[in-house]
Image 1 (cartoon, rainbow, N blue to C red):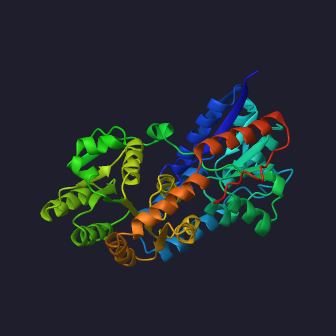
Image 2: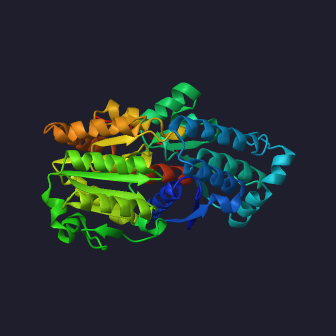
Length: 428
């Protein structure tokens, strides 16, 4: 008999990263579970208040405020959002007012009768758990943690839920040590790498300006389109996602200091900035460069593979966990400027702890280090070796798929979860 699994994810919180994580998880489960039908549901369609909060988050981030102001603003939004959630959300039984507010969600579950619900944010899992109780369904809820930084926010913590899947041992240790989670309920499964699913979530093709054609094949096709990009042993990718002119200033300083480096500049959804970068590099007489204002996620991953193939690669962006872990998977040293979002504050210290990069409060500080690292013939190759070793032990995609499928399968079968203490999700 086919069993129904519903993966519920946010579309409006962030740059579609949570929805991408949900679709990646769903594809992994569909391929690994023989008797499961897995569907992805956007949380906003069940509980419109999620979309209202998502719009407020986008407005805050789009304002391009200093990092400390972003942090303060986000915490205010989360406090307000938490205050407006149904009262007694985690109570058993839920209060009458909560039953009324969650009636549409409960009706959805009563109509579809899933065998398992997986929330890709803690607040989704909490709300789903309450709605299932209201619908008088015994369906278990798995809380799938896509970013350990979210665990620092009370709205996403739910120790009463039966199962939590986290990426790494450090997240499990934090929940058990700081918030009293039961160890047997928190399972480290590793990180799933989105590749095929990315093309389904992120629209748009590679619209480039400069040396390469729009269509990009595998990593070597970057060089086929523009051999100068792969002739260089030093390769730098600068990703400006919701960034401003400070990224253009960084590009100019690095290009002037290191004309030997191949440069790729992505000004996401900012055609004017991409065009200005192209004009700048043309004026400097650089031959190995490319700029984009939009890059399909599959093509973006190919440019990470292009970086990986270099002796001295460097990735520069903001402290987004998804882009950091994607870069780390390809063994790339990274210099990242702090975004200010509370759930991303762990990223810079994590890179520094493992010797594969650093986080910075100011772009000017980042650029000084970038110029120094690129100019040192041992710096980037050494950090590349450390990043590759860390990725091999921490970001094994086959192990992540195996452990994720096994954990979800155990919940579906109603058997105890197995936590392999020997095969850890930690750096060796």
